[in-house]
Image (cartoon, rainbow, N blue to C red; front, side, top):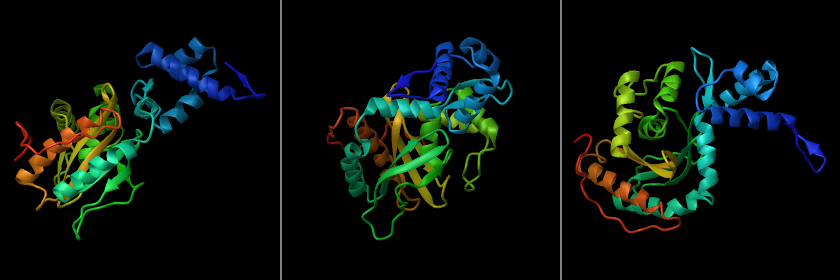
Length: 270
């Protein structure tokens, strides 16, 4: 359990990693007693480590059984490790082109299990625009971006998150019923993008598309926001298809292909 490196040792780090490996190996929810027995650790040690990991999103704990499963923060870290390089430098040209083409602001964000962080943006060229500083934190279930990231969680994990506290009501259009919200997330998976019709901020519409890096999990997501008066109708539908094509081009590392606007065959809403 302990390994020396240049005369130093960090037993707690090795114990933490051993717990994560054991939960990953079992591939189902596991309790403190089983972890302590399997790893020959004290229950108090396992309790302390698992609680700390749960606090930062590394683990999720079922509120009923009190057992643990791997959390979304680990998926985010894994996807970043596989991605390598700086995703912002790859996506920035695409974001700028989208912003210029549609005259709206485009954001890039990542998810850490607790919320969403804006890591890059390309502001609308218009004098009056919707914007936010890089580094801004967005709530877990906020608008289209929240839907994209949460839709990638398996259903038991998602239900655990939704059971912790009620869905916040940001506007009159916000979906607050857990069952309805899960149905909406299933639609996001099926169609490959999320929409927000003044559900997070009054008078603001948005679309969001995942940027996949590992199977089933987006390393980041790109979303476009605009006024519900200007960012609607045909322009909104064209933005969906164009953004889907733009993010698809990013799967070829460092390559940004040309893309064109077309109306989606099956739009979610008019």
